[in-house]
Length: 274
DNA sequence: ACAGGAACCTGATAGC
DNA sequence: TGCTATCAGGTTCCTG
Image (cartoon, rainbow, N blue to C red; front, side, top):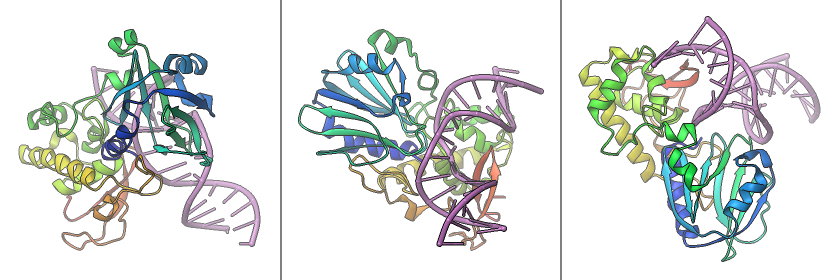
């Protein structure tokens, strides 16, 4: 499940291989991946254009192309990687050919991923709702302890639900929400508004630390995730609670439990996270 | 306005 | 062994 650290790792590995190149071919094997505009118009809009820059916002990848913006979201099982030669991947859904022979492959077993192309006027209008509504990035100056405190204070839901809300913080998903709460020693089911200032402070530090660590480890590969060169990450070797049901807590030895919170599988230490 | 849940999807896995 | 039901979770959409 690509979250911020995985998408950032993909950006870092893909960008050097595509920035400065021009798109000379687009093979759309599964048209419904292309959400906007219609696939034929999509191809016309980006064909022959030079890729100027690649950035990430939350879990979105933004390829700035001359006079257009290519937006990619990997959702659950999407992958984006570069290769040369024939594409044998049975899950390849859209393949961009570049003018140096590189192929940029969007592959997705579950086909929930989405690709958009925006024209300059739409880029200004922020026509993609989810992208336009994103909250601040962890590790950015806009994401402060005061902001997190305010975001939690006037919420009635559970703290984990707030962490998963992309309009509050951009880029956290199920893995890093659980990991952040574990490091902060806060129970995921706690009402968001019930956290005291010290807990908010710990959570703020934990989110930043977890995201920073995970980027350093080039993301978490549970099953599907691969970087832009089709390699696995290594952060799965450093997880505190996610996927560790029944295994001992690294702090206290209690067995990690798995429940459901905010409609998601949720992992926590019953002793450290009261 | 906000919270909660279903729908979208299909490969992997658990259970019979 | 082989089949079927269930699970996985990011986002959007719908309902209360």
